[in-house]
Amino acid sequence: MSIGHTLLGLLESGPRHGYDLKRAFDEKFGHDKPLHYGQVYSTMSRLLKNGLVEVDGIEAGGGPERKRYAITEAGVTDVQRWLATPEKPEPYLQSTLYTKVVLALLTGRDAAELLDVQRAEHLRLMRILTDRKRKGDLADQLICDHALFHLEADLRWLELAAARLGRLAQEVRPA
Image (cartoon, rainbow, N blue to C red; front, side, top):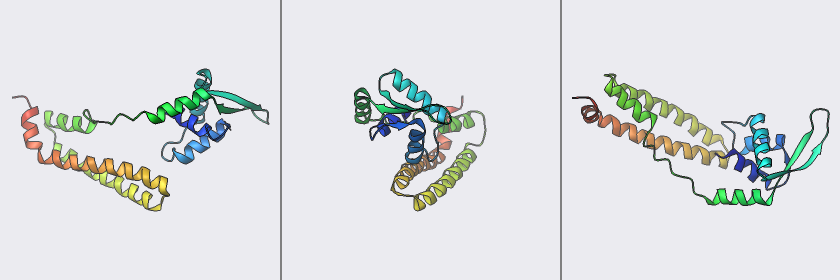
């Protein structure tokens, strides 16, 4: 996820302080990985330097000064370009899971057990996500569905790999 573009998009509704940006980000996108304040302020500093935001005001208070940021026209254009650019699909051609299976076979370890343990971990996470989806709002349901569909694809691959372990072992082990 592009944190810079996400913060820019949040600024399109109006100027905000760094604290407000962090809170809005965490509420909409950071359920599982909230932003650190330092990440917000370093990103805002970079966006300011690149002319994508400007300081709309500075408020003095009991603590440090609070800058209020506003998006510039260049920032709006940048967000529009980012939103219009399709994400590159992840082909997973060099997945860690595949690497582990092949290495288990190459080193004489039990690749079937590795696949069984991985299947159990996928199913555990699917139960957690299904429960979260059941209790969540529409946004949470959609992000859980996205994750669940990827986990289902992984499970199909785990089954296929288990069915082909014998042939794979013959192909990857040195003669």
